[in-house]
Image (cartoon, rainbow, N blue to C red; front, side):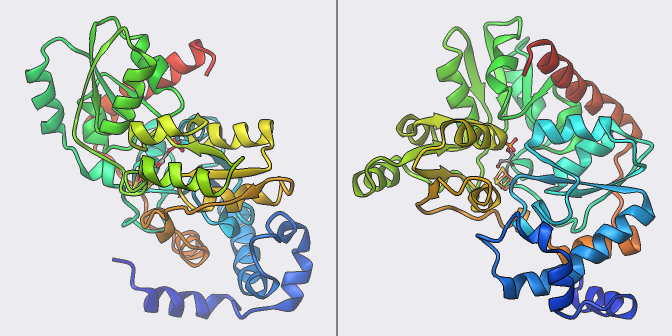
Length: 350
Ligand code: 13P
Ligand code: SF4
């Protein structure tokens, strides 16, 4: 476990990280991307970290890939590329830098490492996990294969390298329906997210989809009743749900898509009021660019994504920790499943 006392003492020896109005002023162009959601007082606290990270990043020849659920200080302040799981996996292959700092959860860093075995992929906090990744092991995949012989296994990227290695192809929330539809089999096994599988089953009625009993602790907390009541109290609100939500929640929503799908939808439609039925940072990250949209309603926080902070990102770059390692044989097999997904997505124009 990362010991924050050690982290802080280590950083204090090398950086002046005291809140600074001067640095806040010097970085006002960066602040302008988040000034609706971050107070000037907080920016004076963040600015020294942002400056230190951006300087050190260049010195280390590193690139920061950040998921859409990162907080605005990371998303707008230090990330070189932001996106959903599919976009980050594709970007991990395209970047030229030898060091990738993954601001997201562990499976995302592992995916980057699987695709780039020669690169150093750093996780600012190895405890940033995922309830879906924790819900299944490679033995679970074998159990499903034994139960449904011959059926291809489509595994969500929110899994460990071992689970990917035991699967036929991966998917993300932005390509799941198309990947499943493209399988040459009437029955398709989807792991580990039962709700994503049930939502895909609605979109691909021609297939018999069977699933593992996993769920996301953030999205499973929403109920259809929450949405019905929210709509009654706030008429005219456009409700947009991530497909990790239960199917009755998705059915109550006006649109469902991956995190980047949600952003594109709001950018395109510019509804007066929008409720994003997903992780809390999503609305914060896009609200400055969309001042005409009023983001309303409750959101749920992902405790794993929130383990990644500016302080830990700086420490990670300073100490070059913690590099993600994947067993070579496992990585080679897992890469096949991830690469099949990337290739099929490109072929399908996703
Ligand atoms: P996206 O691929 O839609 O970004 O989802 C990743 C995730 O973990 C959502 O909970
Ligand atoms: Fe995993 Fe859910 Fe957190 Fe995404 S939001 S990382 S699926 S626990």
